[in-house]
Length: 219
Image (cartoon, rainbow, N blue to C red):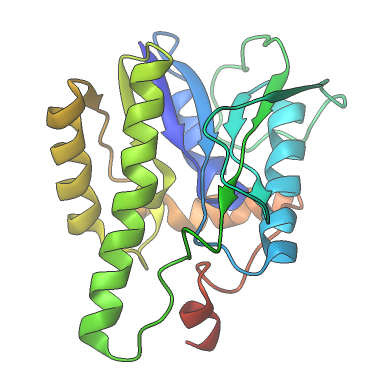
């Protein structure tokens, strides 16, 4: 099964990656599409950490980069990143990872002026709506990318976080799976969130202190 996984950050990706790598029937590719992340320096910190993790573990990653200019309608530049050597293994205690082919970062861009992150809210009800819109935006793009790349299914690392709105994420993913004619791969990784934290610390991944948008910085 070819699985495209939306990645919110390297720490949240770490446990699902090692978990899925145990299933030899799954060919995993990542997709870093997160226009909610503010400011640009924070976006780059998270992306750089993911690039290192992907390079060390031979994972293919697509990403859409931060752009101050007009939004790009196509991915028009390509950068081949080579693995940087052996990486510390997470202690999941099973089979070693299969050899990979490195990873490729495909860069496009989104326009924060035309497509601002959903951060302008100041009450619980509006916060809920903004989170919903943020999930929709990222997960729709993931489903579309999965279809474009001929994947069999899509998923998201948001499913590991006990701080995200789990049931809403499932509802949105199921809806897009039906809309785009592709399977949604669901697994509840929340019981292993602390294990993911341990892995991210072992691998010295960048660990952010807020979800992404300006509202989450304040809260």
